[in-house]
Image (cartoon, rainbow, N blue to C red; front, side):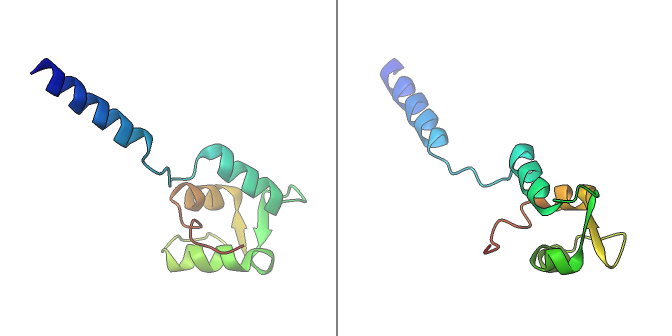
Length: 88
């Protein structure tokens, strides 16, 4: 019985360790934002982030201004994996 429990526990650990990590993390999202906001304005114009804006709109993320995306809006969308299937 002990052997069975040990093997089951080991299998569970190995299965978890091999699970793909799909959720974006804060560091990855922040690095992506830093590249986009090269002027360090705290926002990017939709024309400069057309693909991201389209992905956010498709996912139902609201933007306060019609012509730009703020860092806060971008980070929320990124952490929600809105951009994970985008081709860059």
